[in-house]
Length: 125
Length: 385
Image (tube, rainbow over all chains, first blue to last red; front, side, top):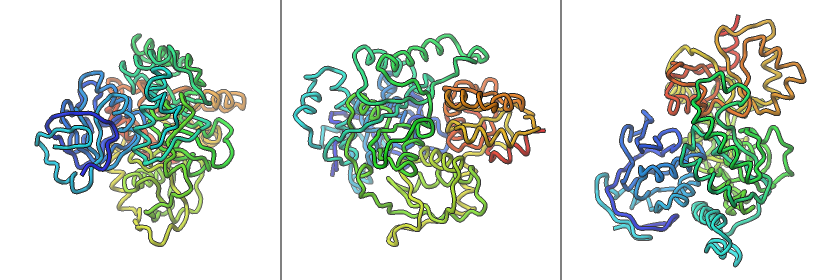
């Protein structure tokens, strides 16, 4: 199920799922955690305190600082689940201590928006 | 990923907090790229310099880090928020200038070269073929892999910083010679200019994984090439393009007028700009020289902001280009860039004309202004007298 744990940790929360990749620098307000890219399917939604499920990060390398800033501003997701690992999200989560796991396509599809889940290192319940 | 005994000790914190942090990042990025080990790199290029992008949390992080951290390899730096020579002309508050200065000081304290440029490949001598580097700026990483024959991941701000502090990076597929693109994009748009190539890059970034083949491209001048790299870096994770016909088993996708129109409609939000910006990526000497020629006996009807590295500005001054550009009404800024500039504020500006796809994306999403896309030729034709 879990393909790989990039950043270890435990977290419990409600899934906020997106079908679009996220450009953290361009699309996320680093103070509030609100998505401000009008073309994104999470437009105007907040990623604060959720389990953020999205395909992968894209775009600017500075997005890693956005993830770190979200954490410093108490606006970060509790954990992230992706289909593909990218360096911006991996390094941002590593520095901010946000658990990050990569899952298989099947597992990804089975994660339902609004469901409550627990991540405990390599396990998703 | 396998670590040496020494690397393991650093990760455990036996060699101090700075190295522990750097190795924590390298281990996460190593896992993310399926690397089996870390290898030495000889040049790191950092992003995360502009206070507008990294904010208070970033400023405080760097200030704390710089107390003890020192770089181990040659390390250069992306643009910051303003050009100190002209900052008084803009309505930046004191807090911004103070925090930007602090970020600058932190990097200087760590012995980083104060280059403030997103085109390191144009202002420094390139190392020999196949040299391993760590470039965070996405246009520079793509340029390094695709044109400059260097090897880098599309590093993040933190993975390049970790490389600078350790002299190491994960040995990913991109760093090996095993990388063959599984997608070939056919360039089907006739008479492309740099704007077309920027949109091709943006399109390719969306559909490609780590690398992509681009077919049907006969020649690529510097301006188009930089535009392609920057567009690609903005929309995806793709870190390399190869020009050619592509592997026969690769998936074939066309970039035609229709696909181009879709990208255009996504990024172009108005048909007129209050001002013009040139530079994201920053302009190199060749582009400054071209522009000087194009603007002979012409003068801009509206503000035109040009961004370039300080060293390019100095060379251009010596060669007389600066005087000519200023006579044509251009404002030239060093050390900063269109991309995420605090110098364009939606309180004063409704819309911007640019030939930069990367600039357009961030002007629209981060600065919140409308964007009018035009090629440089069209800008000079329409907006000068």
